[in-house]
Image 1 (cartoon, rainbow, N blue to C red):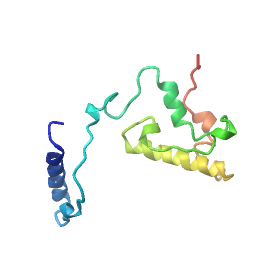
Image 2: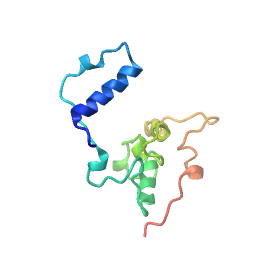
Image 3: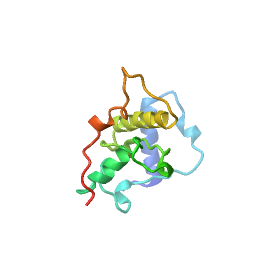
Image 4: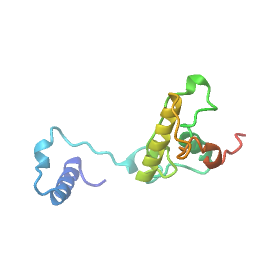
Length: 136
């Protein structure tokens, strides 16, 4: 955070120059650098995980939204994916897992189904879903 946007750009370009010595990244820059320091943003809750005690039920709703059988028809058809809706925010495996869940959700939404010998996450939802806590 103590570095200016231009100083951060120089650090990034130096790092990329070591990784890709034959690529002129600087020649592709078309504007002034913009940086975001999450630590300086309002409501920043720490790296990777933004859940506080008591947030489990909200995280569960996000993570399991791909299984839409219990939703009203008007709430079906939107599928989220990425580490923000996973149990492991900030990690690639959470993004991949939720992407696979979303693919199953889209397939199911349009009437598709998995091979019975290779069930998807929604096919095993009742056995594998995170515990549902009481809402009161």
